[in-house]
Length: 110
Image (cartoon, rainbow, N blue to C red; front, top):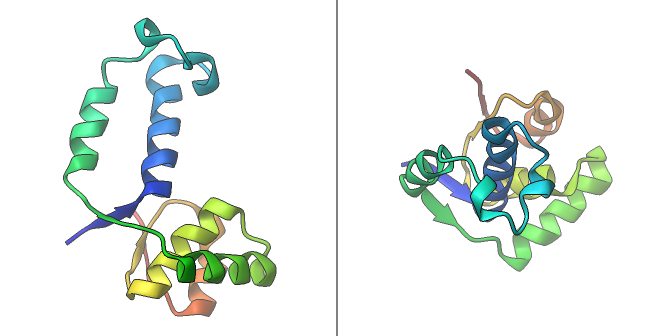
């Protein structure tokens, strides 16, 4: 099974809102008529994943990862979730390479 977190949902949606609208995602706030129709395809795809909620333990592990590797908060939450659940991480983001390797998390790239 494939899983995502609320953080992954947020990052994917934010990125693709900008990509499909050709606008800065923050400028879409409150402008329903500006939302790209492709967002429905994105939501349909995301509904196919299982969702894993963050726990206090996940957040504490993320804090540790931020201090240890100077990771950004969302990246640290994603990696902490993988560590907590024994998941591999599917990503194209090179920022995960060293921390994931050192924490024993397998990376799946495209």
